[in-house]
Length: 286
Length: 256
Image (spheres, each protein chain N blue to C red):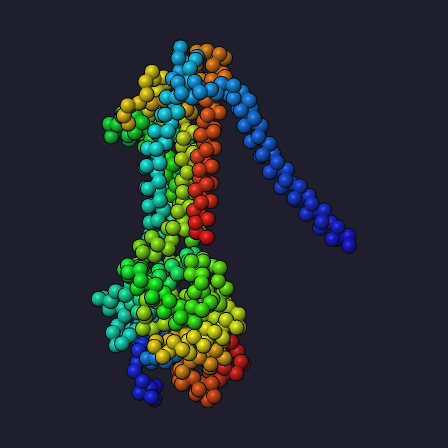
């Protein structure tokens, strides 16, 4: 009797600890969103979203930064999605599982831990200088793409691993080639997971400052980029400037909060897209 | 061992199989006859599943394995360089231990093998789907819900679906790898009836844990132990008058 009471107490204490941990995390998130929402909400207006900054960025909006971030994210996606998915398919389905592939996999995991500023400098060396792409949307997008690749590959590989081997074997046993088995009986069920991981990686890339500040993001541009080889304004970099580099920091604080809010909504929006994609494709599969 | 002068469909000669350094099959020589059911019995880990998976080269996909010896189907070596393993697997169908329907509709499960083999004609596909489902005694149960997901079927129905799927690509041989170990007794009885029926058109090889099942469905039985073929004979003979002491001990339940 005593023993079972003790066991129940231990269990209650354990659950309480878990709840507190979860609650703390949630509290921080809510506080954070509330603070930014409250301070940035006032700055949001149609004008703020649709116009360029004016008067030394003390007035006006952030439209060029929204456009810049959008364009750069598209380039990032174009590099990271196909390359990442194909690499993952190769690693999980085709490559022999030996020391070399283990080493490759380990390197990819490590790459996802490399600080983003290092990617930024690498982008300067490779894209801006060596490939002569200059400081441009292309350079910045490719740099972010490289940074996102390890995440895409890892997420895609995990998604492929969740597909039971019986789907592959079942297809092979019917006379499918390996590629047919993968294309028709593995990928359709793995793609939702692959996309989810990929979009989360993109959301992270969209919010990065360090990789783009040397490769293409501009302090201030009076015009929108006309081609991929132009410089651009980007939300995270704009926020960084408004929050730390501006000559009238106190005055532009509301604009900085407004920028932060837009950036967060954008990133949350991308994350929600991932959730929606996964949900839709899952339902189709049933 | 061919008293009735039957036509040999599959012949394994001095077959050895290795998982890395582990020798899973030791010098197995056996003949499976055309349009007969051959059962492979033996204790867990005796190599019976490994053996059956060599017959459609399913073990090829497991890294670090090696095969020595020969397997002939209709007298032709299935490891010969000019053999297309994809074509071999179409000719030698397989039904797995756990029902493994694909997460598609019932119809698409059966049509899958046809489509990957290049069949485009819709009418023809529909025809084969119906014929295959009838062949697997499943048609009456599913004809009104061909577009339902295959996962909505019961375990036993799923296994018959997998049999129908194998039939659809018109194989010559069907391999069953413990097909009833994951389904209930009533479903098992249906699958056994089906196997009985299938041998009129196909050569059947079945691995089973269940000795009664081997006795019920097979014409010939092979008893394997520790990777070796201990005895191979007519099922009747194996179960009433085995030549080997080990076989007798196993079928009378002294071990296994």
